[in-house]
Image 1: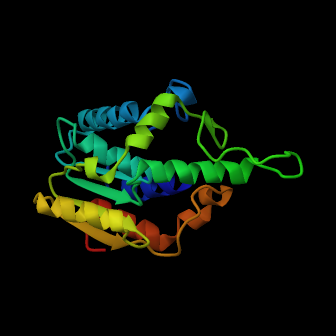
Image 2: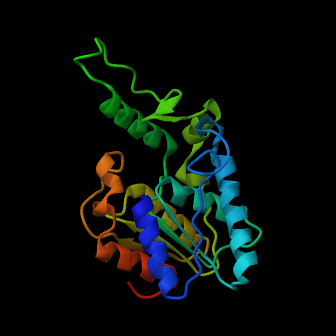
Length: 224
């Protein structure tokens, strides 16, 4: 994923677009430990990053792009930000917390359980760790409460949803937004479904040229 963000940022910068990438609190090079991160804190990190980029560039329009949980956090942040983004680009946002916790639990089990070493298969429930990263009870509780009906993405121009295929939940969210007068557009991501929790997800398979073109066009508001 870092490779995709880097390539995307480099290509946008070459086209004259100011870009900011950042690590959430408790992640990457930011302060804090894994267990210190919460959805609420990460949501507020986006608002702070937006304010900092606006201060540095004095740009009159901004676009927020997020992938998976980052896309969900972008929607959450847009609803509380004093200044809303011009456009939201949401690639495969997570729209149901309990389902995501189940997905993470199964991925953790698949990557950590060895039947030749362990006599019994551990629980699939997410407890305090997910594939080497610590999580807190607060984070788990917030994720359990995450529901599409509580999401209220807000932007000045349009929200763009990108996925290999639209789901019932994303369609419901799109209908919900359109009913509020908030423009919503679905774009189909090229290629097959991505196995997000395997090591290969950090490699070239996540950054094909046609996907980068789609993301760049979405950020710039061009026809894709």
